[in-house]
Image 1 (cartoon, each protein chain N blue to C red):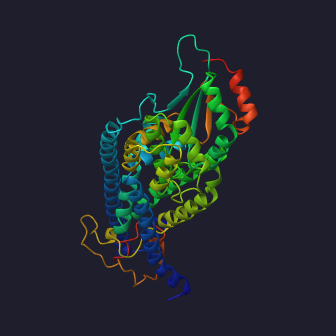
Image 2 (cartoon, chains in turn yellow, brown):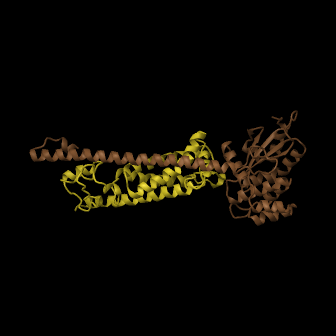
Image 3 (tube, rainbow over the protein chains, first blue to last red):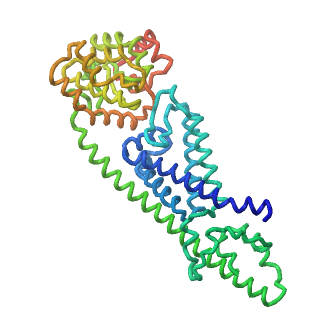
Length: 194
Length: 250
């Protein structure tokens, strides 16, 4: 086993950690908002970026979307899709916070409940943006390395296939020129059967 | 795929390539199905959330009917010159939070002036008691609403600011709010009961929501005849007074 393949064999485990960490982030974000829709709507409105109807849709829908993302990430379904949606949301949040900062608003991001206008001395835009960039990095990791251990998607049999799930624990890292090609592709599972 | 595009050398390799292509296609289809299902689930969940939450907050709104006597439709507490035909006094909307330090400064600097102008009929004040800083703000705003009912808003308002605690340290506790009420003569059971039961909680929420809809993004915010007063003037008592006196009724 070469050093490269050893590192590569660790990637699914790292992806699992990233997946669960993001699940916790979304779950916490969603649960802390879902109990008080009014406050969430206020938090969204405080950004002064969206028209009122969109504010309501966002304030009511976002917490549920976040919880949905959390559950799906936890189980590991369509990890790359979830990573992409997560990344999009984080980019949107970063843009929102930065724009509030740039416009001189004094708001809390409301990322984990609360939110809305706050005392001008109490803003924490830098911390909020740094935190979101960290989350964005985890989401980006999942886009690049979506395959992870303990993921439901890798246990679902390929459609019409023989139900081969042998590479869920890719311990037998396929070391061969051909599998390297396969590795570089989106669809990794199943390709090693032959 | 680069590998598969190369010309296979023999039948066995060709079969392998073909099998692999088939498998790749299957795999892609499987991923499309899972990805699509996941997207669909998220959309459905979000839509359910929107429906559920809008129903919930709709029912919350209808309970916000209990309000202090005399407050305006938007929840503001009016004070001073009544707005009537021929009245030339300007209106001054004051958005404040009992916990906000700058609101405390505004009250220290201009509170007395504003009362005097209002009593003289030179301005109509409209207090919007926001409560975004924390639970202390909510309790204080509720108690101030209770004071409105007994015609003691102005002295109680001044009293609360004179004792403004550090933010979110439970300084506006129910006991403190009652104690300071007693110091300005608010000792009736009605007031005590109103403070203790948070009778105007719904109104406090309504005021906060309304200000958020009105685009108030900081406190204190002053609107003179509906137009924002420059921050530089807000905390300069002499300039603020001059601006009010210079303004005509809107």
